[in-house]
Amino acid sequence: MLEFFANYGGSMIVGAIVLAVVALIIGNIIKGRRVGKHICGGDCCNCHGCSHNK
Image (cartoon, rainbow, N blue to C red; front, side):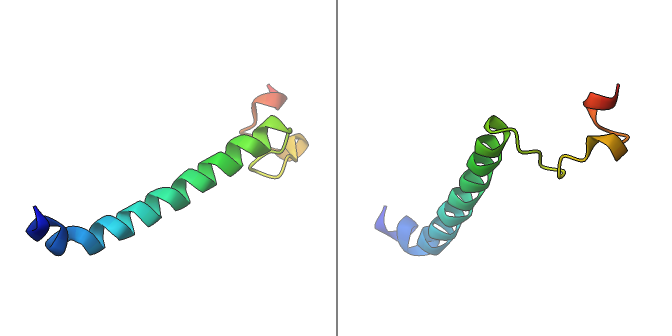
């Protein structure tokens, strides 16, 4: 078991850091959407892909 951590410990730490960063980004997006902030900038008048113009 110790050999496994010795071989893959660095990869597991880097993976955990990447996972934490992704979780923070997703949390920030969710928090922004709750307060009405749009990811695209919120200029729906000139957006052809926005559901507000349909």
